[in-house]
Image (cartoon, rainbow, N blue to C red; front, top):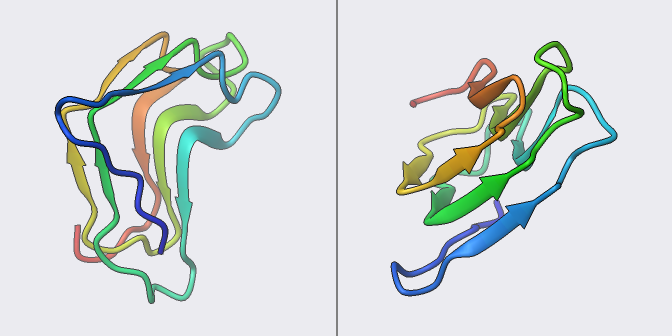
Length: 93
């Protein structure tokens, strides 16, 4: 499972991401087999995510299909999409 991590001194900016799609996220994890464990999403700034409507099913952070044991720490979003975060049938969360 990929890890998106930073230290508190380093911040990753996602600006204007995910603007042409629906049912997705600026940061997106998909693990239908449920084999990946412990993704860490920390200290990110997400600005201007989604297609510009509150009906496009977009999220700043989207944990999809059996993502297990995530750590979501110190993230900020502005104009996040429909939701700041979405959890779709996760496991051990």
